[in-house]
Length: 377
Image (cartoon, rainbow, N blue to C red):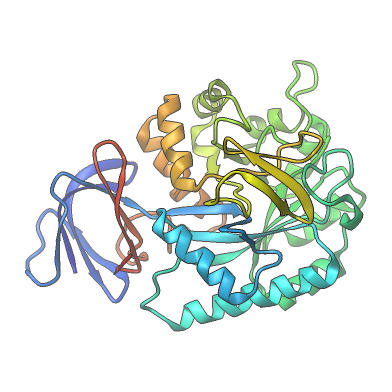
């Protein structure tokens, strides 16, 4: 298959190139590629890499903590149709047996995806384990009865059940044993600091121990203060990659712009979408807790925000509408998340040898077509 005459997003900029795809991977990128079979005319369109949402809990009434394999596959189809071709299946604090089932079910779907090259689903590149290693003070929408002290044995148990699929693990660095956990696991997993009242000094200790990531920056953490910058201040000081929910609700657009000006290469756009995503306003249950969705805002009874109802493609469009350069927004939804997980040689960009996950968009960044491993959605 040859994609012709499109403006291709390569190395952070758009260039007029042709792309040759074979067996689900990009084989060649050049000014002109000979051959005429299975051509896709991309005149007037831009070709960008499929987006990679490393923090999404679910959609269509389903979530990764409680859904069976058939429902997980349905979610993956939804993501792909909306321009998200790679994900981390994000679990959250839950009853232990339920957590066990979640790991097993996600593994089953991942195994099935590896066996089928003709997939039209977003690829599950691993698991983002958000919880249960959080304190009570900044629990957010996590069910407090299932929060746990940091336990290497419990973590190892979950990871074994998942087939060693956990790639990102979120912890509160103020909990007992946090630094030891980070030091022990930093070579094998991306460690993210999350749901915490961490001071700047505590964040510094965690970063020096090997943490490289921050979960949904500004949300469920100590605010940035001029004498106590907390975890937010540690992002720029220690080069931590930082997720940012770009729905216009969780973070004011001016703050989003500020962070992109300060540390653009560390910004990772996420959806943090929950199970009502793709459904109308109403009453739902997420993470075992009742939530209300109204005007795209999801919240608990006490007003606590409970995740978003956007897709990562929506987040990119929002970022651009806030004034973020389109090139930076695309990188923050594709290459930077892949790099944060050491997956940049496989997904997150358009390059020879990488998966042919491609989005065709028009000049206003409306999604026109999606290809997963070269398969048209």
